[in-house]
Image (cartoon, rainbow, N blue to C red; front, side, top):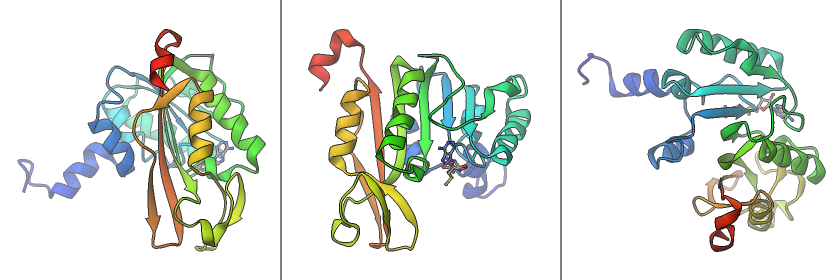
Length: 218
Ligand SMILES: C[S@@+](CC[C@H](N)C(=O)[O-])C[C@H]1O[C@@H](n2cnc3c(N)ncnc32)[C@H](O)[C@@H]1O
C-alpha cells in the first residue's frame, strides 16, 4: 500500500492516466526531458495527455473528431488550467494548425493506421515532421504487417487484419525510409507487439538530428 492509502494501481493511474505503456517506456528513457512543447496528434480521449498536463508540459492536441478535442480541453482545464484552449484544435493530421518547428515532441498513438492510402500516410507523417523542431521527437504506434506477413500480405496499403479491422499497415522498410526523410534516426529499434496473430502494433520513435550531425546518425 502507498503512503496515501491508495492501491498502487490507483496511484499510478492518478499520476499517469491510462497512458500507453510504450509511451511510458519512452518517458522513463528520458526522451521527453527538455522537450516541453508537446503535440498529441490524434489525441482521442486524451489518455496520453494526463501525465504531460499534470507535469507542466506545454501541451497541444489535435483530432478530427470534435468530441475528442472537447474532452482533451476539459482534461486541460482540470490539470493545466493556464493552457490556452486554442492549443486543442479540431483538424486533420495532414493540415496541422501550427507553425514549422513549433513542437519539441509529437505523440501519435494508434492514428496513422487510419490512413486511407500510402499518399495520405505520407502527408500525415510529413506534416508532423514540419511542426517538429530540429531536435524534435516523433513517437508513433501503428499497425504493421511485421510478424503476420503471411496472413495480411504486403505493407504500404490498407488490409483486413485477422481481428477483422481494416488498417493501413507499414513494415520496417517503410519506417526506416520515413525516418531518413524526416531527417532523423531511430531512437530505439523498431519494436512490434504481436497480439496473438490477430494484429501487430509497432512502436516507431524518431529523433530529429541537427543537419550538422546527421551523417553519423544514419
Ligand atoms: C484509436 S484513437 C487513438 C486515440 C489516442 N491517440 C490514444 O492513443 O488513445 C484514434 C484517434 O485518431 C483520430 N484520427 C484518425 N485519423 C485522423 C486524421 N486523419 N486526422 C486527425 N485525427 C485522426 C480519431 O478521430 C481518433 O480520435
